[in-house]
Length: 170
Image (cartoon, rainbow, N blue to C red):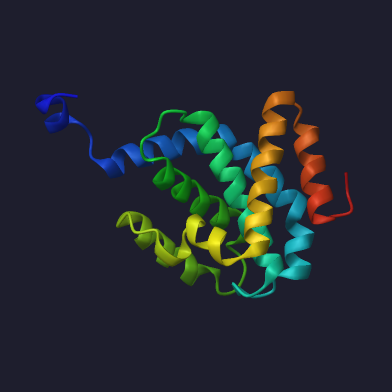
């Protein structure tokens, strides 16, 4: 991109938002289904926002894995992949876990981090290094979504959710 292209190009935040919207449009049904299937698991295992709760970190990791895999499927050549994934991750966490007492503070801080492109101690990369349940669930979320994409069978993905979170329904 030459000088004029850079001069008139949309700013980084606009591009990230545009790409995150593309991802959420394509993956919205995945997160809707995830919320529905895991609702009883959330009620039983996460009563208040606590990053020391392994069950909560498992949920966050799986959501992050889904967000990461969705970003890779939709925006294959995105130079701001981390930022787009963090935006999708925050949105999905808000949707799936936003009703948990204490989650709003985390979501507000995460929103400010994203606006400043400072992913720090609430980022996917941070949690991957700090939480084994997050790391394991992140890998599982990526694998499950990629398996779904290759088979194009929504029941396959729903079954993965049910089995991993032992939700007791198929």
